[in-house]
Length: 43
Image (cartoon, rainbow, N blue to C red; front, side, top):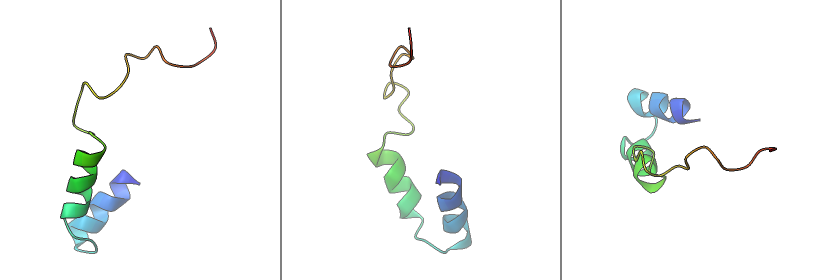
């Protein structure tokens, strides 16, 4: 979905602020936003 949104923005189908706002909202560029990898799964 992220790639599709970027493609649409590049073609002018959606405003360029849409993917930029999503990156901010979901902290996509924040390396501290995720877990350390120890969440969930079978032990």
